[in-house]
Length: 396
Image (cartoon, rainbow, N blue to C red; front, side):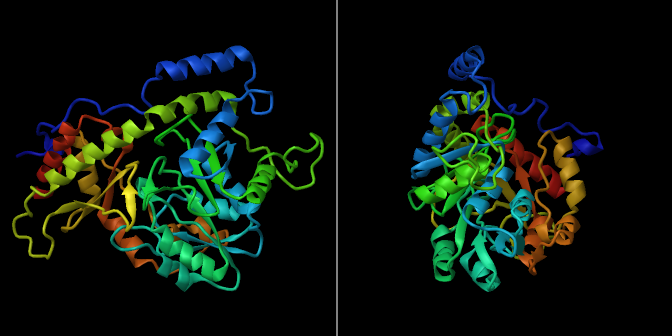
C-alpha cells in the first residue's frame, strides 16, 4: 500500500475536531452579561472570578483558590507564596513543558531537573529522594498529559525532608488519584487555561490550596503585595498584578458543567485506540522483544481518572522518527513529537538550572509521540484512523 507521503491515498481527509469547541449557550450568556456590566477587571466588583475560584477549589477538594493570568505565573506565585525564593532549589521532572522550570527561575530559585519513570514518564519519590540537598525547598510533580503523578510516594519524601509540594496540574483538570482530585494533594496546585487545555479562555490559570495562611500569602503575591481584606493602597509585601479577568472567568465557569462528559469522551476514544493497537502486527523481519509496535504510555500507580489531555504513544520498533511524523501527517493523522528533555535546553542551564542524568527522558524523546486533545474529542469509532495510519507507516 503506497504511503500518502509518496502519492498514495491518505487514511483520513476530513478535519479533526477544532479546539476550543464552539461556545455553548451558558458561556455565551455569561460572557455577554459580563461585557454588558462593564465590570471586566477582577477588582471592579464582579463575582465571576470569585465563583470560578470557589468552584475549582471544590473540584480540587480544598477551600481556597486564586485566579491568575496564566499557569506559569500561577506556579511562580505558588512557589513565592510558600516561601520559595533565591538560594532555594526546586525539583522538577525532565519530561515536562518548559514553564515548570522557568517558573522556578522566575521565583529566583534553581530548578533541579531529574529523570522520570521509564514506563509512565512521571516524577517518582525515588527520583526526588536522590536529588534532595540542603537547599531543596520544594518539589513540583507534573500530572503529565492528564494522568496523576504518584502523589503518596512523592508526598512521603516531601514530608521526610520538609519540602513544599506544588502540583503542576496544567493538563489535568478533573483527574483524580486514589479517588482524590489532583490539585489538592500537595501544598498548592496550579491549572492552566491556555488555548490547548481542556478548559480554555485563550490564556489563564488558577491556583488552589488548602491552608488559609498559604492562601493569604499566595493571594498577596498575585495582588501587588496587598493584605487580603486590608487597605487598597497598603502593600506590606512585594507582589505583582497577576489577576485573571472577569471576561476570561465567564468563558471558563460554565465549562465545568461539561468537563466530566468531555473527559469520558476522550477516555472512550483512548479505549478504542488501545484495542486497535493490539491488532497491529510487528514489521516483517523485526527480531526485538516487543509484543506490539506501538502502545499507549501507561498511567502511574494510583490513577483513578485520567483526564486525557494528550494520548502519549510509545513506538517500540526501530524507525526513522522524522519520517514517521511526516508520514503520519500526510496520512491525515498528525502526531506531535513531544517534549525535548528539559536538561538539554541551553537557555535553562545558562540561567542556572541543574540537570541530573536523565536516560529515561532521553528515551522518551526518541520513542514517544502524542495525539492532541482535540483529536481525542472525535467519535471513538474514528480511533481506527490512527491505527490504520500507524499500520501503513510502520510497515512501510
